[in-house]
Image (cartoon, rainbow, N blue to C red):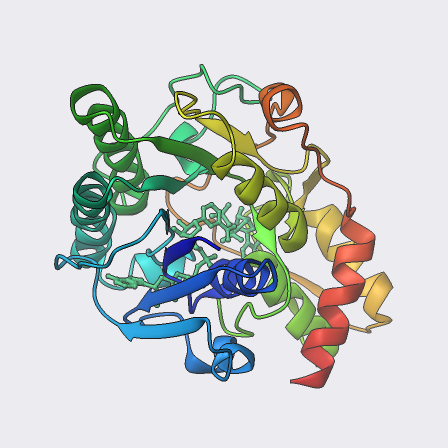
Length: 309
Ligand code: NAD
Ligand code: UDP
């Protein structure tokens, strides 16, 4: 049994990760300030003797004797991370700094939840890990993109300077149950709109692309990455390679839900990346990992979830 800290553990991804780690028999401490996470996401774990919830903001130091840290704390939806951009940068930079400081103190391994956003609006397609990206440092998305880039820098400097065992994964767009209906990201928006037969809101012309990964695939990739050999830091892309335009996604959702929603077009947000698809050669090679749940299956599961809540 390992003692594992999950920052951001009450969020969408964190709650699935905590569930998996508890199932594996570990002692899990979930750290969260409930900015976008909720008690509801982890209520099924509250009676588990090996599960502990601590309300804490990672921009302040935290101490616990742990073997592993998964650092997920950070709002991920553009509407949430742009709500208080200064706090977003602080969460990524100071939060990662505090978690790395803890990892150093107690000799824990740390996995950093980085993002495909470090590639910005990519000029190379698909994106391999050795692509340095195309990020606007002063835009509306910068608090998230640059915060996550700086967090990666901190991880690598703690690795080189202090020998902290770090593991960086770059997560591509992920969806699944426990995303909030008002989360603002595209999959949850389209499904909730389709279920209510409301207009489906496409931002821009809908030709921009994303590659969507189902949550269970991501959690598997995270656990595998944590278990790689000590000197392997990544970064490693974790995502589904099947790329769709937002128009294709909207049409798929309408058809799967059996909705009579119409598609409407809204302005494209600032600096919205035009394309995104992971190159997962490294994940295949180093983790023996590849996604197993394709979009249609994942959308059906998520639709069932949204029907129930
Ligand atoms: P989420 O918003 O559901 O979860 C984030 C969690 O972090 C929430 O529970 C929130 O309350 C908590 N949090 C935020 N600021 C905090 C702070 N200062 N102190 C403590 N807790 C704080 O988002 P998610 O989709 O579950 O994302 C989790 C992580 O994965 C994030 O780091 C995100 O950047 C990364 N990621 C997610 C995606 C995706 O598609 N979902 C893609 C790339 C990277
Ligand atoms: N998007 C959209 N309609 C929505 C929400 C998002 O067309 O209701 C678009 C958004 O502009 C972007 C894509 O869908 O091009 C993915 O957006 P999301 O916020 O889910 O993720 P990110 O932009 O961070 O990849």
